[in-house]
Length: 355
Image 1 (spheres, rainbow, N blue to C red):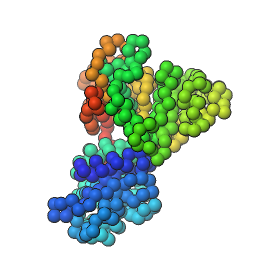
Image 2: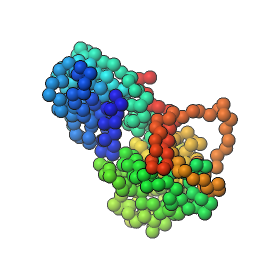
Image 3: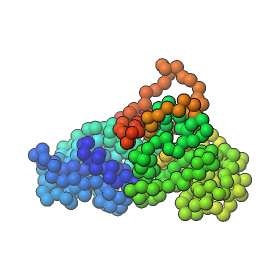
Image 4: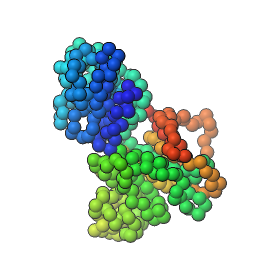
C-alpha cells in the first residue's frame, strides 16, 4: 500500500478533479505489475496496472482508493478487475464520489475478496482535497503554506523575507502549487513582494492554478504582476461587498475577476461558487491568522529554516491565547527534510469516508 501511495503521487497536478490513485498487483507475494492514474481522462490506476500485467488471474490488487463503479472517460475499474480474474482487492479509503462509490460492494457481489482500511489515514491524507470536496461542498479545501525561521517569523523586522528558506524548499513550493486549484495571498503580500504566484518547476499542471488576492479594501495597484498578467492567468480579487463595484471600476479591462464577500466564511464560500475546490494560502500572517480564527484551515505546510530572527513578522498574525486544555492536536501527515530546511505537514482533521 505504501508503494501504491507513492505511485499515486506521480499524478500530482495532472488528475484533478479526479483523485490521486496508484495500484500494485501481487501474486504469490511478488509484484507482477504497477500502475497509476497519470492524467485526467487517461486510464485509471487499476486499468494501467492490468494493462501492464500478462497474467492477472488470481492476483491481489492493492490500491489506495476504493475501485470505481463509474463509466465515464474510462470503464469501471470494478468490472475490469472482475473480468481479469483478480481474486482479492485491498484498498485504503472509500471513494465518496456519488457516481463512483460502491466499488467494494460490487466486487464482493462478484465473488472478489475485499479488505478495506489498510494505511487508511495515509491514503486519506494523500487525497484530502478530493475527499473534502465531497464532505464540504460549501467551501474549498484550504491549506496554508508558511516558510519561517525557527522562532516562527515570516520576515525580519524590516519586512525582508527573501529568502528565509533554501532552494530545495522553494522547488517544493512550486511542486506543491501544481496540485491546487488556486493560490491565495493578502493584499499586503502583493504590494510588498509583488509575487507572480505561478508554477515554475518540473511539474507543469494540467490546469494552471488561479491567483487569488484577498483585500477588504479592494485597493490593488495595476502595476503589480498578478494584475498585469491577469488576462493570461485567471486572477480573482475578493473584497468587501461594499467595495466590489469600486474595485471592479479600478481594475476594469485588466482581466481580474472581482468577488464581494464579508468575513472569511463568505470569502471561502465565494471562492467555492467560483469553481475553486482547493486553495493554497501563501501569505501573509494576518490572512493566515484570520483563517485559523475562523476554523477554515484544513492543512498547514510549514517549512522551518534553521535560523533565528528574534523580531519580525509572525507567521500567523496576532492571535489571542488559548488554554492548553481547549486546544486540538492536529494530525501529523508528513515530516521530512528539504535541504537544510524541515517540512512539517499537519491536518486539522482527516476526512475518512465511511467512518
